Image (tube, rainbow, N blue to C red; front, side, top):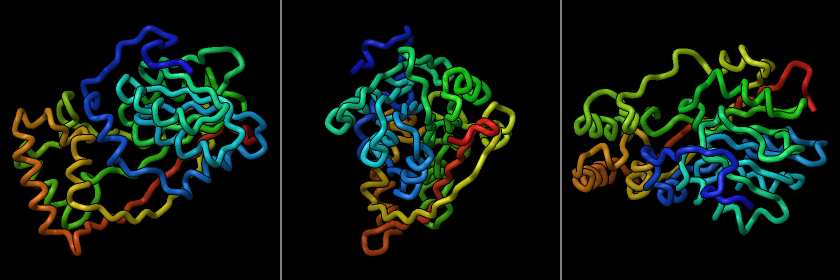
Length: 283
């Protein structure tokens, strides 16, 4: 198994955004709903040996969820710009990967190339990270490297910044009091939302046969878990507070406790899965 300090392509790790929060990311970020995981696995029904390419893998949530249900998975390629995340992902996958081989690639998603011949991915996943990528170039890369019957799956469910509830509105207001009205995107300045939908990106690519699936998700957060989650986001990471993050976290915890009911903060989210194929490319 290749470690991220032995990448197949020379690349510079971008640890500026989430480099120091990999452990918090693994602990506090919500996982994928079971229904979405089984949907992804079902796309590989009848494929004897599946290869997974997970773009923006973070701490490896997608492959960890798929390994127990996608039994014909023979190889996984992890791609991330952040070596700390890749190390965390590799550590998490090691005890559960079995005979499945795993390779880590440090670099931007659109620059990925398979590490060896015969490893064309049949499933390409991108969970909660497509908005950080060069969106026209990622499907073009997928078209170059993927098997003829491959599926590209873009998934996500927003964040606590976008979720509309009384407690998230109060939390968002506290963050804006500290950092300004614009939503921050880590060291990259204000967040600029996409000017078009992911469906439009895919429609203009080789993977233009797109199907959308939505899964309701009910989550129960504790105030402490929300405070643990916040440093893993681009809009409330600790470095943005210029040494005042302890004060902010204490304020956030107090605010969240006033909104919790029985110690619980409820989030009713929706997890979206876009499954994209080349026209006529269903397995």
